[in-house]
Length: 327
Image (cartoon, rainbow, N blue to C red; front, top):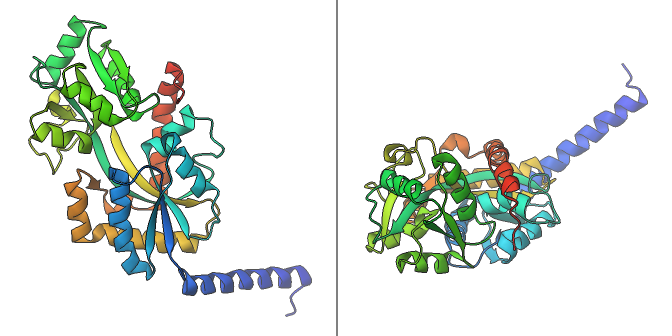
């Protein structure tokens, strides 16, 4: 049977795509891969990128280099990834701030969903409620009772306008029926300094930032905003145990490539991430940082995409209602 012209052409195109994909699978990667970290070196997201990236090298057979591209709440670094060639050699690590909150608080030159191809969810770290050590309330129930009895008198430290700490405070007010002042700072270090000094009453922030201060006796710990206790701090109750059931705020990290990156490259990168997160040394190091490796079934591009969409649906209406715009 002779094939007609259009059918011959379609078969030829399909065969050429298959051949190109097979060739790409054999040659990728052929040079170093860069992970763009949209925040300064030394922070938790930078450390996660370096720990995971170093182990990915073994799977990919090429160096994985971390490049810090900072500024504007992570939007500059994320923008660099969005505009990069979709060839798998420039990828980026991001989080709840860069790939959800920034989309509602900044005027971006890219779309936080459409301009990226998800690779894998990496880790989840819960937010935590801590207070100045002189706070009379001994637990979260006591803190909420005090805030209700003294509306607009209490204060919470905020790491910056549009920061996750501010957004979480707003949700906390809604969930508890409390009112308190939000005190913004230019960065988490300054915010924490004033809570430690007793000038601000409490803070809702990433657990990794608070645990060393709690361990040193500089802050009180009330609860982690998670259904499970932290491996790094098993004595701190969950938010359910503390009396505010279901108030979960996971601060997660994920890996993205530019949109239109071929699926065969996404697959290779995902495989390297999965192998890295399964490594016992990597797992232990991330736990030391207060970060929990996500379950294997969550280490897929689809799982990261679904989480991002769910977080957008959760946080964007709160941000819009409060009229928050990043500085």
